[in-house]
Image (cartoon, rainbow over all chains, first blue to last red; front, side, top):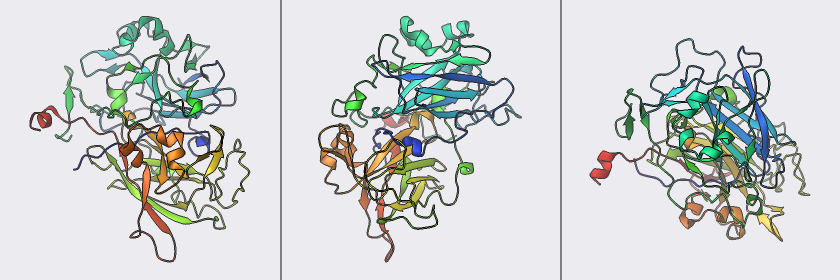
Length: 190
Length: 249
């Protein structure tokens, strides 16, 4: 095998919605799945205006903290979660809003022996972004696990709240994305 | 499990691959004044380093259930044929180790031959083509190979600066096998006079990296009496070189 140099990233531009959204994209589990939660929010630019042409993608473990993927050596528990596809995708609406309907992930073993708190990895794309930005969504009912999470604990304490969703009613969690400003969301370098 | 990649063995026995960092200059900066829309849409605070763990080294393996037979041939999605120059676009998806990436989803979107996107917010006064949607999908084969048939896209004006025109391009979205490998990019055409003038293309700092977004014309793959052909390989992040390999380099 010969080493090859990477292909650079470019912006999704204003017209990705021709191709990338698909009708059930926000549904990580089918509508009506018992125990499903809805994570919703809005995307804001540095002037505080909503971003109406953004794309949110989520990737997460199942409720047992496992992935149906060859590089999770444990794999899912047999039987698993019917219809759970771990991946969600939602374009923002004219009011900057998105939603993802999913199951809450479990906590995960970390390679260094620690435990990761339940979380979703998020990729955010938009016109005006030459590369994706990456963030994480954590859960407000996991205070202790969050306090011990190896990623969250490397984030400056005063910024951690930008990564934790806010309870918004039964089965509803709000997570807004601020590209800049006072409450700029924490973005990660992976 | 292959043995020629870096593995990190945890106290709990969890073994994960590690994906190499992109070399400096490969990807554009998020803040790039030449592309004005970046101004309010880039993070101002420093990114926080996220070591790769389970969520980052796995990723969606989206499969055949998304694909229909016409998805890879954008010229047969309607009853009539679209206007414009028919092209074949083919290549491989690899990782930076040179390893093919099989069974991975590619999604593409583009203008028609007149430089017009089929999108509600697109106002360029060029004609729509009733026989061309400009959207495609395919899945790489076991050797990482992909192949699309489409129409040569057009150039179009945009509002970034006076007399700004985008070079002809096709948008590509790829997943690879892991969250770390996710890539959205644009493919350009060899010899396009607009390339030196385009801030999006030129946002990539390294000149050689920019060239890797440009498809090459191939007379060998061009089909006589039917369609021109271009080749373009797409390279995603690969595994880090192992300690063993470095020690013997």
